[in-house]
Image (cartoon, rainbow, N blue to C red; front, side):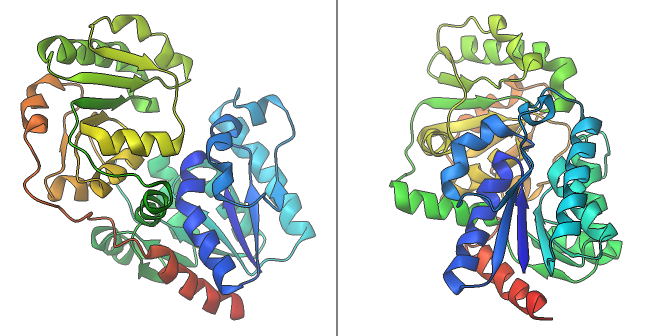
Length: 349
């Protein structure tokens, strides 16, 4: 039996193609929702069937009012009970979340094999992204099977001693392909700039970043900037700094609406890892508001530029049209098929 575990919106987005492929092939599997992010999960829960198991209990931890340590311990404790009461051949975790790390560690302690989707991404800086860099590296050392999204991440796995690396591609490309087909989302050359800022390591300079975005808007009246503001209070408290007439601060949007916004955007400004990948699916440029990125492929193909906190000097580059169609460096949109083919063999062992 295969267990597919998720606890955040990005995990649902990147694992629903795998779950669909398992169902399509009739492969026995169960799903688990850890409850790490209950609010954001509501937006994407229709992408997956109702979970067979859930750790949601209505506590403050489930609602998100917690620390990293408390969230980790709560998920570990619930996972320990789950593995004692049920037998699984393999647990599938994705990426670098607290859910993924906690499930991987508890699976390891209970003799359950681990399959790590989106393995091998690295900045080699434990402070950025924090704590995700540590989570992802630790999971890959425990995992029995590591699914790399790119050739670069495959090389990281091979040189770090990770077991059974497979080059599969990133399932986000599958997800965007499926949703675009089902929801009829297209690319357009609009005048909007989508801005998202939320990363934990940027909280200490978030006020400076908001000031920088406001200056970009004032200096570029031809652009219409849209910022879906993150619910984290360390982000929201800076909302008043955005005073330019051509900035629209809106409530957080659903994933499908965000894809529509990316499709309509002229370019993007973001500190999100996922949006770097999604920008490539729409052939859009992105200014990455970070000092490092575990997705350097977006820089390699000329669609991304690392700007740190200095956004304004790079706006002229971002406004220049992309030269032709640049294939996404993160895969061909069929990663889930490759992953499930391997998982089928694992479950049969």
